[in-house]
Length: 276
Image 1 (cartoon, rainbow, N blue to C red):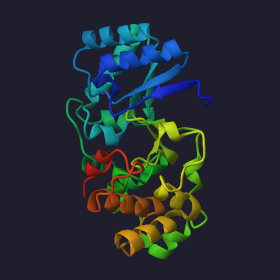
Image 2 (image 1 turned 180 degrees about the vertical axis):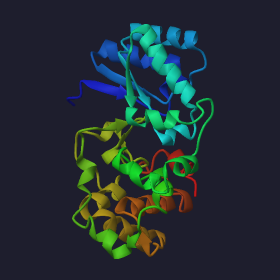
Image 3 (image 1 turned 45 degrees about the vertical axis):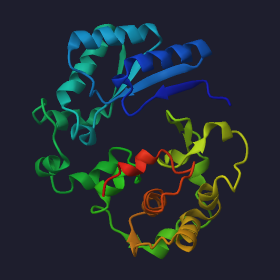
Image 4 (image 1 turned 60 degrees about the vertical axis):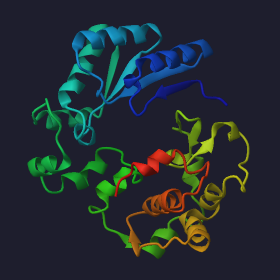
């Protein structure tokens, strides 16, 4: 379908180095380039072990690691591990791509052997720190980002949110940067929790097999709301921070409350792990 190079993300690919090695070998054999592998550095424990692992993967075609650097990651990953992965890349001649390097100094202002939550960042760098982050770091207001930012950004009335996309969610067509998950699902518009089976790509979608995506594409979140309210008993709140916030709430309701077994609402674990 015209895609000749990929990147490999997660989750965390390096938690399964044998699986990652198999993917790199398969890409090499198929003539598909691997631009980089994303890592959050959670796997790092020892410099020599890391260097040996990366050396083996380099022989299979690994050229670069995109190394996640952000306050969001530092909530779970001690910065000492990130530094260790960067050093291991340099030691074996692998390109390190810190994303985003702009955060390095402020994360390094904390003790690097442990994790630090967003409240600590707010206390150190100002009460508006969290609000300023989306201007520095691309944040899609879906998934857990809604939980993080819903108290930060102003909510808008239901009608205003629905009006944003009554002509349809054209973001679903965007293939400039796209993802396929390990279950064989294409994720349209980078909207996690929405799925198209990989074997259905390359031709028009069957509206009966994909009613939720059909509603979103034709009528936007307003169409999805009409479907969920009239057929599944969904009761919307009075306000949401964005159309993506409303879409996520509807999909979570359908997946968890109504327990709809739909190929569009995959993987189910995405919804199960969103939290309150």
